[in-house]
Image 1 (cartoon, rainbow, N blue to C red):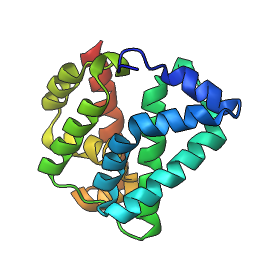
Image 2: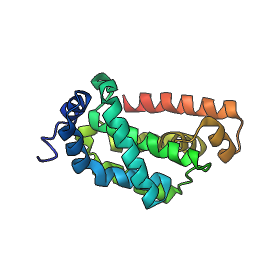
Image 3: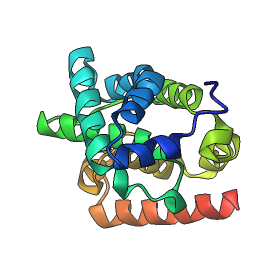
Length: 181
């Protein structure tokens, strides 16, 4: 199948029905990209492979919880892998500390793995809107949604009070939403 014809939603629904071929098809189609996302977050190839395995077990077990109204199936799959990787990092007692260049590379890799039309995102618009945010607020949003840091971790990193960080993120998300609409 070409990228334009693979039906991620149908594959997830088949997984929910217990059809193993669908999980295999998802794995064969996305594992290389998903492992790259996991590797970027955990910083270790062996751990990234473990994360990918755990994520596919979770996909198999929780495929029935996918809700199409909340987003694309492919996006949901990437979210499961990302969250699994972040949990692995937290279990190790460390936080992934990506440098700005690494964040750009992660963004590029994710964009290459999931074309804009499949994700339904205006990446150029998002980047443009992010540039309108004050640098410290933009950093907070990036730490929260790319690195997966908690509000407490962000406050410690940027040296700002917890309440301030929460407000910055909430207001920044509202600004991004308005800018993108």
